[in-house]
Length: 64
Image 1 (cartoon, rainbow, N blue to C red):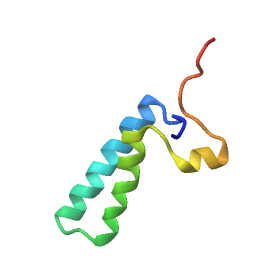
Image 2 (cartoon, rainbow, N blue to C red; image 1 turned 180 degrees about the horizontal axis):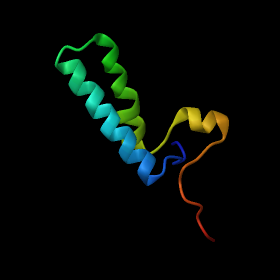
Image 3 (cartoon, rainbow, N blue to C red; image 1 turned 45 degrees about the horizontal axis):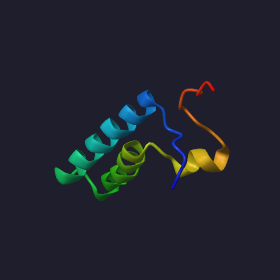
């Protein structure tokens, strides 16, 4: 459906950040921490809609 545009380091960072924010939300540090769903999902799917809009990619270049 979407082209993968999130590289390995970026992906791991997004998943970790998303989990940390969601843990904070679960512990009651504020409703704003539910924003962690976005980096978690983009990390799990390896695609970022904003990267697509701006033509960015952190994936390594594939050699043909």
